[in-house]
Image 1: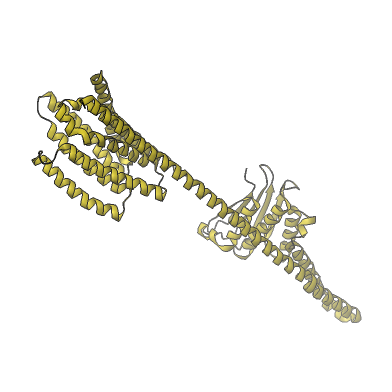
Image 2 (image 1 turned 30 degrees about the vertical axis):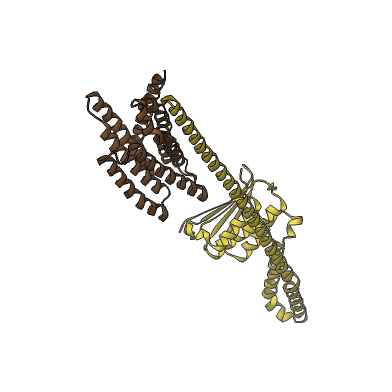
Length: 253
Length: 216
């Protein structure tokens, strides 16, 4: 073998080895792609599972609320009605006591009215014949009667453009937000706005004590987030100690 | 013709080496430890090349300089491969292999008849190829997806695997023709182009990544 032939052999071997390296690169790439596809599938399955879990959770909580609503309406409502009838009959029998019992009768009437309204807003079937705007109106009127908080509700359109399921979930988020503002924030004013400029947008702002952004991991707020996710809506919560809280539920663009 | 091609490839090999060295210096601050070790090695390669050229110009022998560089290259690339995928097993392998290589290199330096550069190169570069292959295997298993690091690793593997056939025939070739080195520079030069251009691109990619804001 002369020098040139040896060099040729070296070149051939070198090229073979380079081909081998190229093979390793390709195998590495294929392995990575397969892993990526597997990861995507796993992620999709986990998302599906999470979604199904949330649907089931919501269905259970709506069923519980429906039961509570029926119980309030049928049992407690019935008891209050019979109490009112007994009181009215007592008032008719004894005219002297009638004046004394008058405030009691008025309170009883108000309690029955409150109970009826509460029972209606808790019942998911209410949404079959109504909509989000009416439900919020009804709930703000009810809350206005039982608390000293001023609720300001504004909307620019009667229709929200959301499906019945989305409206129900949005209403539950609204209820949770309002309850939080009343129970924990010591708010004096709550503004509720529904706009349709760039798709549906519900905002609830209060002038209460607010909270640190870390607290947004708490249960009630987590529930709101998971409900928003289930409805396919976007929920933003902005709060700071002493600066109130602002909750914006909107349709992603 | 062959000599002209060899000269042309050697020229581009040197250019790529210089670009790699420039990239190493310019983007030094943005490189991870693994790439920093390789950046030092690239700069060493540039300096050795220049010093070797000057020594030849003034009629001084330069083989000793390349022997020292060869030693540094093997050690630095081996250590870099450890920092790419640091595992206790790889650390233990290096703990044994580096002293063995050091002894072999010492034998070659003080008694070249006992151990030739061909055998030493074959041993040193095979060691690097094994280390790089094990790193790639581990990266495949762990789903490692760092593009600049992968680019450097694969280009190093291409270089060191590519020079193994040359080192296997080196002694035999020199016995037949002492000037065969010039012809062989076609292979080394081509592999250098792949290696140092890839290194320069990878250094730039590290820099660009450090400037790109992370997605939240």
